[in-house]
Amino acid sequence: MNPLACQRIRNLILENGISYRTVRSITVEDVAPEPAAGISILLIDTCSVSKWAECSLRWQASGGRTLLLVMPQHWRQSDDLRILSLGISGVVPITDRLEEEITDAIDSVDRGGLWVDDEALYAYAKKMGPSAWRPQSAITGLTSREEEIAIWVANGFSNKEIAETLEISERTVKFHVSNILKKYQAPNRRHLIVMIALSNRSLSLHEMEKKRA
Image (cartoon, rainbow, N blue to C red):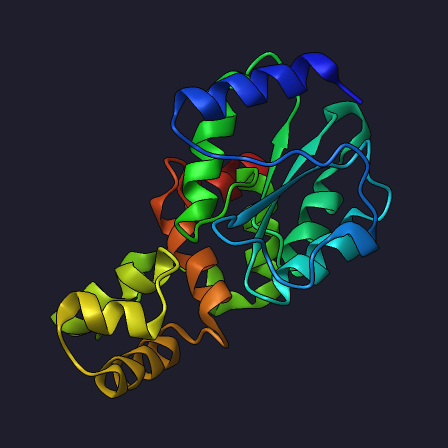
């Protein structure tokens, strides 16, 4: 729907050595049951794909991640909350800053992170419950090994990948991850990623509360 944005994205990902495949018209049925070999992110233009949520869910079901392109005038914070609830990893508005954001967004999402507006991330964390939006510094009791593994988890690495990297057993990683989730009061890995993402944003939650007051 936006040829200029499409060309700019194509140029940027090629400049950064990222391979891609373009699908001009996409439906739920067009999304492969499994992500194509070597393709980890489905980038969807929501103006062109009416059933973007269904497409993303089908893609994610077999391990893929989704990043949405949106026109800001048609997008609200409530939409960001919806995409986070659906498990979608990020949103990039089509603006003059597209070239600055798209490669950073792809890199973040590819590593298992999230790319959404600070306010939306904050609101989503509030919905998750009080434990989710406490500053990380308020969460104590992690051992040095748990802190190390928490960083790997927050960057999207699986238990197997962490075990191979740290040269420990996968069973040991599972044990530590279980303890980390309990200490953060996080029901799953995605919530843990949100909590750590919040703690790393330049604007603290306390500052954000003051601005909203």
